[in-house]
Length: 303
Image 1 (cartoon, helix red, strand yellow):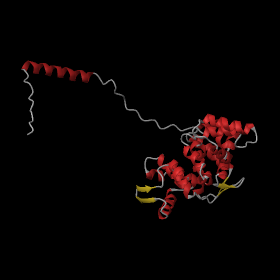
Image 2 (cartoon, one colour; image 1 turned 30 degrees about the vertical axis):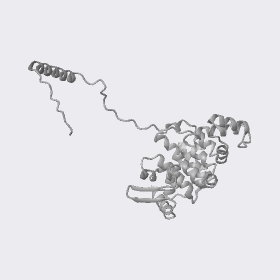
Image 3 (tube, helix red, strand yellow; image 1 turned 120 degrees about the horizontal axis):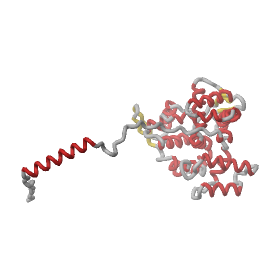
Image 4 (tube, rainbow, N blue to C red; image 1 turned 180 degrees about the horizontal axis):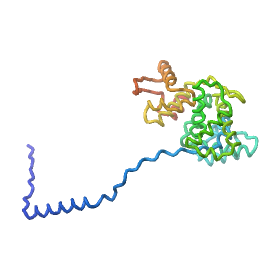
């Protein structure tokens, strides 16, 4: 049998009660007269800072083949500095001059972090699938690193969606100069010659990645993102968005000319082919992919 003991409070004399009431009243008065030391006025949260544009990257170019060679010889266990020193010493990329070799190494160092955010790209290049689809994989990582390229590709999409069939340097220059009023006043600090080189470099990058074609009048191509890089980009988008629905609506898909409706159509095709499992009802999305992240896709599926 369980015995429950009841503990009764000790009797309190009238004198003690009066003393306690006086103490409580004094405490209440003190708390009213003195504000809390850690109380702070409400402040509005600051909007995230906009990263300034750099003219350096687009002027140097996409360096697609040089970057591929750099990643192919990269040792992930070694530091970036050790790897870059090795490239400079051996000229493993076959640069025509020491000056060009130095520029390629500097550009690579500014753009990529093979042991960090770009590790999946470094692993992808070790696979036949990654090398076959090198351009769209590189485009994703480079456009994230080079904010000016990413924004430029988004602008090119608006021109394409509006029915345009070509882009020319004066159009790109007008867009670039207009960015000064959209959080990028640094553009006005560049010389006119620099702005023209950047505008031309943006269109040249579009040609290098297969989004445009031509030398003077850059015409839009019938661009198609293959299934393998589509899944890679999808896993990257999922990793950087709070929800699956947000990842599917990520504006960075427009770099590849894939608005959300077209992306959903492609996912349904992959679902029918039993490559993925995809169901959607409004904002509720049930998505099952062959890997949990881009690194796992590269290492377990592509290898």
